[in-house]
Image 1 (cartoon, rainbow, N blue to C red):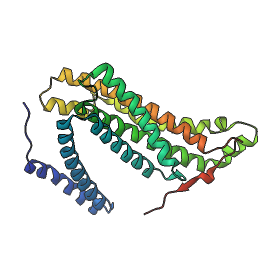
Image 2: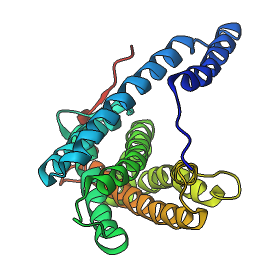
Image 3: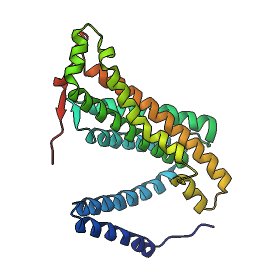
Image 4: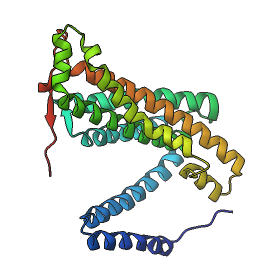
Amino acid sequence: MLVTLHYTDLAVAALLLLVNGGLSMALDLGLARPLLVAALRMVVQLSLVGLVLTRLFALESPWLTLGAALVMLLFAGQETMARQERRLTGWWSYGIGTGAMGTAAGIVLLLGLSTAVRPDPWWDARYAIPMLGMVLGNAMSGVGLALHTLTATAARERAAIEAQLALGHTRWTALRPILRHALRTALMPTINSMAAMGVVALPGMMTGQILSGVDPGEAVKYQILIMFLISGATGLGVLAASLATVRRLSDRRHRLRLDRLVRRKQA
């Protein structure tokens, strides 16, 4: 049985934010304002998304579904770039992250829709958009973390990398330790999440389905499917973005090109 939530119920839950804000001010953490802004952004964005999805589901248009997916991807690319302390100059930082996430999420989503879920039609927005949101959100976090780690570490280990290049090693050999470190750092949150799921934490999708009346066994199967899709998209996206960034941080003469990096301006 689905329990309908009222705005008063949400207001009561929002009181917990006041507790967090009070703790921040008491401990001088400086997080009260960012917490308030983040909460307001979340409420506004989710409210608008709810209105858009209601209309999108009713229209049942493949082109509108594709348009919504592209908008989600473009915003994900912007968020990925914003999380990097050092980013590639020009459009490269945005283009690499967006391209890697779009390719990985597209491949994985098409696989899931065509082989496991099989909605009719296969592009049904009621299935495609929520699945894309979960896959793309996790891929965004992984790609952003990988690129941040890769570029920051390359700048920090410049002397060691150039020493390897001076000894005659290729750019791939010289940058391999940094690449491996970035890949491990980016993939570890997904691995930890899967390892703790079920025993330590009940994931949001599964909990939402159970609260809406879906049989727990069926909700578990959907959650397992989504986690496989998320891990696949994150792995593919992280690998593609990292390899492209390594290639951009060097040239055909196997020289390190840190001049192609720019530090993010501090607010």
